[in-house]
Structure formats: structure tokens, C-alpha cells
Length: 399
Image 1 (tube, rainbow, N blue to C red):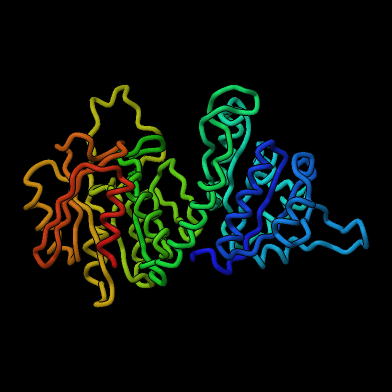
Image 2 (cartoon, rainbow, N blue to C red):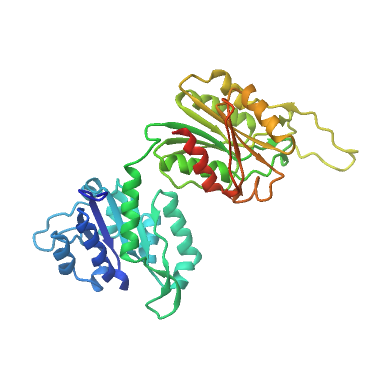
């Protein structure tokens, strides 16, 4: 079983849903896990340490020091001991403290010391859950690499109906079990993958630039998928508003095509795979005006542009036999012929073709429709899918 022998810290906070955690603990123990409960002072108002200790056969940790003999409960040791930490239920108060590092109780200090993955199951009333402050705190916790087990819809303690109740113990258990099952099967573990994403901006004066409509969604989906499959990911991102969540993703932010070229050529030699998803500008201005170019009296504007470095072609020249190079081609006409020519000219292993003619594909949407063209002549065409699912299709070709 996936949880056999695993050490799990279960955190309990001050919510009426705390009674459900007893069932969750029993599920963990029946699966062969060892459970240590850490409870907040408010949590003890809803469920007693005696009950929890009887279920786990371990003393419950609540205070920094034992009231009996003054011995210290080490949150550091718990952080090193655990294979996972599950906080269920997790109140809005605890979520806010976790997001901002307010270490005023044993549960928060244990969380801040935790080396293992952390799973958070929120529980609160619907208006508290949907409040912008709560949602911002949850997003902050996601950005730190925590796993949020989204609250469920249903009847709440207030007798209102809406989203905010803690997921059922069986659902939380299946989430943790699924994580460890997936962790046991990481086909890209040990791989080092570079991914470029987003647009580049080419300045023409102090306030204007030449750019494109890329949002980076496809590249970021690829980065998350590679990381979830066990790879260490070097993400080179143009100017986008997206955030990553997986701790295996190491991000380098760039602005111009020249910035991206330098970053990519510097990182590529240490990687075994590169996926070039960014929409890099083909042309740039050789001279950038230090002042804003005025419209008045100019009689029009003429720009002399020069080609940017071709990142894919440059990496293709230096690609080793043990490296894989994947490109992207967004075309508007003669799609197959243009993509095939680019595939061979740039020494790519395969290229991802998509067309702006396809409804729902391309920039600023959450879906894409792609065809994979391989150097050996093989083609794989996929239907319109979410970009997350497209990322799964592309990454599956790497193992």
C-alpha cells in the first residue's frame, strides 16, 4: 500500500469539522501509516487530545513545552520526521498565519519547519472562504508549493449552503494516497529540463515596445507537468503575470529576445532536454530612443528592424547526442510544410505545431489543438484540449 510505513503529521485547527479528522486518522493508520497529531489551542475546544491520542497511540502535541515536566516539543524534529503534513481542518486564521509566517503556535512552527509536502484542507463559512483575503492567502500558499485540497460545496455549520466545508475524510485520504502512488512513479526523476515561455518585448523608445499576444499559459503548463513527473525544471519566462506552484521549478525572468537568448544558451548545456515554447520576437530595433518618440511634427514613424538571435537554431547547432530539443511552430498558412522545414533546419527532435486558424487554439485561451511532428517522419495529431492536457501529451513523449 502507498501509505505503508509513511509518517504523517496531522494538524487540527479550531473548526467544527475537527470531529471528522478522527475518521481521517483511522484511515491513515489502517493503511499502515504512523500518525502524529499537532493541534492548536482552539482545536482542543472542538476535540480532546485524549481521543486523538487513543487513535494514534501517541501523545498529542499542542504546546511548545510539556505542562508536566517542562520538556520541549521540537517542531524542527517533526519537520524532519514526517513524510507528509496534512492540516485538516484548516481555518481562515491558520491559513493567514501560514501564508505570512506568523509562528504563534506549535502547528505553525511545525509547518514552517516541514521538509515534507504539506496538504491543506480549508474549512470555514462560505463568505469567509470566498473573501479576497482568504483566496489571496490560499494562492500564496500554493505559490510556496503547498497542496490545497479545495473546500467542498454543501451545508455549513451556519446552516447556509455553499462552498467552504472541509472535504470528507475519504476524499482527503485518497488525495494523500494518490500523491504517494504518483511519487513512486516519476518517469522524469533525475532529468533536468529547460522550458521557455511567454512573449518577449523589444523596446523602441522609453515607453513603447514591439510584442505579441502570448500569455505563457502553454509554457507554464509544460513546466508544471514536467515538475510533477519528477524533473528539475529551469523555466525562462518572458513578461507574464503567471505564477508557478511546484517547488521543482526554478524561474528566470527575462524581457527581450536577447535576454532570453543569453539565458537559454547559458542553461542549455546543463540540461538533457529543452522545450522552446516562448513566442520570441523575430525582429528588434537596433537603436532604442532614450526619450519618448513624439507624434507631433514627425510626419509618421519609420522603424528599421534587425533579426533577433534564433534560439532554437543556435541550440540545435550545439545539441549533444544525449540531449532532446523540442520546438513550437505557430503558423497561419501552409502549416505542415513550414513546421516540417523548421523541424529539420533547426535540428529539433520534434516540433509542436498549432495554427491560429483553429478556433480555441493559440494565444490568450486555456485550450489548444496541436500536431506533433517528429524528425523520423512520425506525426501525432490531437483534438482540442485544455493546455494542461496538451502539456501531458507533449511531456509523455519525453519518457
